[in-house]
Image (cartoon, rainbow, N blue to C red; front, side):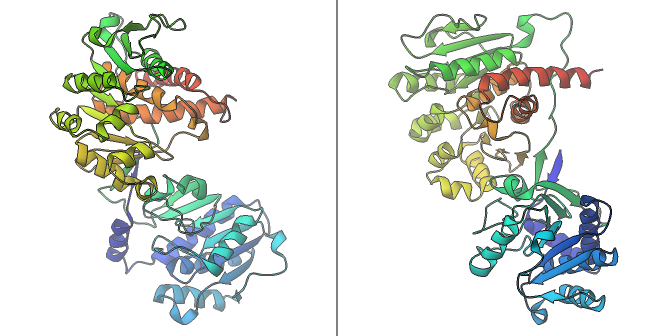
Length: 488
């Protein structure tokens, strides 16, 4: 797990250490990484420097690379007299070592560059890039060579991952002082490439704003030899209205494969089968026949009928840890009585797993506004509903009512197909049924779900055409491997 820091936190850190040569260290770190990305020998490198301190880092990097006998072309988009003091000093240092500054994109030789260094804009950018700046970003993105971004790809919002008009698509990003959340959620992963971190000689900050899930969270205990199905908990799944029984069955199957000792599936379709022929281990029940369970998932394929509403009411009265997904969230958003019943539950006993559209409905906003700040949106949901919130999407965000948040780093585009959310819900309820705290189960499940998709892709099962069933089978293999390794 890695710490994540918001811009205000990092700005305060920079201010505390303003007497230290941070720009010199940053530029040297950029140049060192650039050199490591290139083969031995002499190379042609384009450095694009912007009008602020990010541009200053670029000038320092250019100076080092020139000293190491690379041929460096620098394009500068600002004015020397408008640069901040440290950046102006870096500009002068570049000229003093014999460097040349171009104000326009070179018309010749562009096809022979082996690397581009993006030093246009850093974490302070607030406005959208338009006009000449957007055109410059497009030129960088069109080059058929690796791109190394300084601190953050130009045009990407550091706190949110929002593209501000246009953004550089980097192959590598070297980020300073700490990891920025915008590198890992929304559009960040498509623009950051491989992320490298350099603390610039400063000690790590003692407290993080958030946490990156890049490894398994707390794992379940290894099972005792003297155990039985009752030792491994029972999970319940309610959903599956007419024409949507597959969603509930996927959730129940995932719960079974991820270790729940018993799984009861309540299908609301009156014509639902009494048996899952592919997984006859599942116990199918009517809604009024659900026995005691250690954890309960409600919503996959549930629909919006009066029967669904009544089933959700019953579930909210059930003291078991509760996972609310899909239609359960839509019903909740539309009914203040259901919201009241949710508020009456014990703190930390519910996790909500909305996709952006469902989350927007729960917050009475639109999807674009919600996606503009996924961390803030997840936090607002957690506070409003006093629940653990898992906001799905690229860089899934998990938030708690006390303000803690995590961004998941696992997963790939193969997860963008039907049934993947149902599978994730089944993994959460399985882990909770086996005795994990609901927050721990949620954090482990979201990382495991993405890592299982990554493992499936590594074995040639995607990303195109990856199925939810393949992911749950991959998740079972991974979880057993992790638990075995942790207890040997």
